[in-house]
Length: 270
Image (cartoon, rainbow, N blue to C red):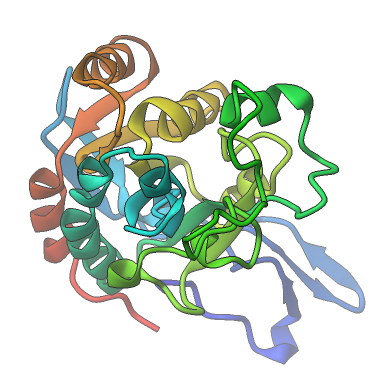
C-alpha cells in the first residue's frame, strides 16, 4: 500500500494507520497534526459529470461477490435463479483489483457472513430471505449443494475463486444489506483516510445500492462502476439504480474510464 513512512522511534510512536490518520506519541508530547498525504489527482469520465478524485483518499469497495450469489451450487442457483448476470462483473473487477493494488488504492471487501445462531438477525431480514416460510433459512445447509446460506465461514460466503483475495486486502463481514449498518465498514474506511468510494459487486439493486446510499449519507463521495456491478433482478431495476445514483447519490463510471488513470499513477511505493 502507498503509506507514509512510519516515524523513527526517536520521533515518537505512530498511533494510527499512518501519519495522515494517527497521532505521534512520545513520553512528553503528542503530535496530532496528521500531515496530509500527497495529492494524487485522477480524472474520470462519468455521469452526470466527469469528476476528479484523489487516489490517495480513494478505495475500491467490492460488495458480495460470493459463491452463494455468483457460483453454480450456491444459494441463488439452488433456487433456480439464473446467476449468469452476477458473473459478468468478475472480469472487469479482476482488472480493477490488479490496477488498484498496483497504484496503492485500498481494496475493501464487504461480504455477507451471518451468525449461525442468527441472534443478530431480525424477523424482517429473515423474511426477506425466506418470504413464504418454506425455503431454506439463512445459515442453514441447502440440500444437494455446497451452500449454507451466507453463513460465516461457509463456502457460500466465500468470494468467488476468480477474484478471491486470500488473506490480502481489507476484508469485512456484514450481516445486513448495507455494509454500513451494524458493521465496522465506516470505521475501517475512516482509519484508512478514505473519502471516495469506487463501488462494485452484487446485487446492484439490493446490497450495492443500499451500501452506496448509506455511504452517501455518511459523507463519502460515491462512484458506481457500472460494469463492475450486476443483479439477477429484472432490467428495470438496473435502470432505476443508475437513474437514482446519477440523480441523487453520486456518479456512474465504467472500469474502462478508471483503469488508464490508475495506470498513469504508477506503482505504489512501500
